Image (cartoon, rainbow, N blue to C red; front, side, top):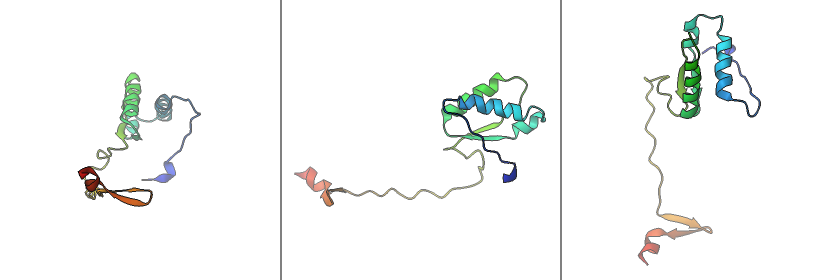
Length: 110
């Protein structure tokens, strides 16, 4: 990835992020070949935002849409990468209360 070509943008509070993103990308790629916008990969933080961005791109005419990914499911970016399994969650029957341990099974047996 070439980080020299990366750009960071900001929006004022209350701005419609999805609309600004779509309008900004369309303006940036207005003079570029249509395939250039289709090579763009957008990572958003929620499925709701992904749907909104997709709907806004669908409302535009004669453009190829960029690829949208949700942050919690990036398998579409690199499907060949296998992540290790998560370690099992730590669980104990003892709960701390005022720096002392309460034994839950013994309390429930009373």
